[in-house]
Length: 506
Ligand code: HEM
Image 1 (cartoon, rainbow, N blue to C red):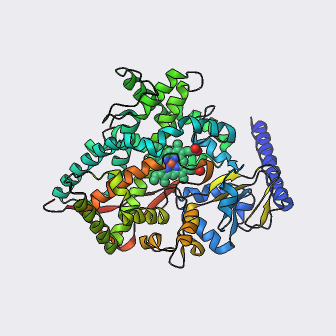
Image 2: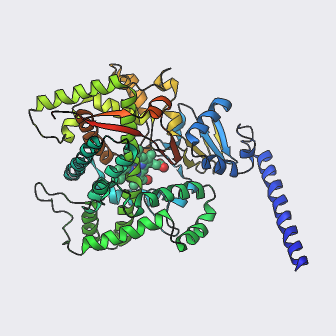
């Protein structure tokens, strides 16, 4: 027994020494060895894992660039950029940079989803199959769902105002965003706004999934084993969402008739994603399979809820931190409402698009607080590539973090850290177009967010309503020290504590 144990220790020790020597050798012979970064990051990804665990990588990433310059390493083969040309090279039109293996942990092993798919050709095939359902022209179908949730949110805020109690607005924004996504996907509110609670632990499951995938993605080979083990013990965010999706599909299909994909919905009637997917499946069962239905619905829930909730919180947070901006926006909304001559509480999407200050406020908040906060990793394709003036061989993992890009003073000026919606309303068209090219809260290129118009719909309709109908008082702590966030890919506010006060006479 003792000899056996001794042998195991010796084998493990030899393996460890071999790994260490191999890593040192690889680093010393790498053409990129002079790229600066933390010492441990030269040899092992464990540095990145450790940094991610602290849940503030958007801050760490900034410090790295401050200390080491425009190109830094955050792993033996991982490079982050703070450079004006890098985004175009990595994500630009026709880019052959595929997603890195980190994305592998955002899926159930042995299957695919639109967000995690790494193969460029497969991804573009899948994307074409879903594209129409997310287009600008399909928004009109989803608008009644958003109105329904916005009205219910309004009821809850009235009650919260009467109670006078402090509330965590980040939670309520989640309730709204999750219920909207449930409605547009299944015609079914999941009930978060009804009860103000995390019904069935759904939000927690998604949050656990975010933490898991963010960390497991650093060592993607571990994912099939970890995922299997976690699922066996009943945990695992992705597994939970897929099970929930299958259950929702079963419930939805029981009473529903299959609609014809090419049939336009009756006036005033909306068709949810699931109905469209099922219709497409019945028309082309071999190319649009049941897996397409499941993955399409699940992607909406995972990619579309927290991101929108975070963005809504960020917009309100920056408005509350800047009362003069809040007042200016309220004035715009009230004038638009007077001009429209309607007394409806709903703000139509069309109306919201005619409010330039509102649009500037949204853009500026998403610049200062983009929902994702890690380098958006891609792999340098065959033949290598020159990025930010330096050659990177094939297989290098490269990425730009939106938090770095959005705060670049060479793009946004010396006041890049300040909340100034006015910067988007300048007469200088060239400057606006330059800033637009570096504004990337929804990512860039072929992998840009497919749901961005939907989130724009949700945001544009809710924010003016809140600003028009309520006053909000930040808690002393948040007013003084700012809010706290956690970054596991999504940079989520934790303590957005406010008191809601309904305006009288509205
Ligand atoms: C403000 C809200 C949102 C933000 C900030 C956001 C952000 C992003 C970003 C940055 C990406 C690209 C990630 C990458 O390249 O790694 C992405 C992709 C994606 N988003 Fe969003 N998103 C939002 C809302 C939504 C909504 C509402 C949906 C669905 C209803 C959605 C569905 C997706 C999907 C399916 C992808 C993968 C697209 C592909 O790879 O082709 N997102 N999102």
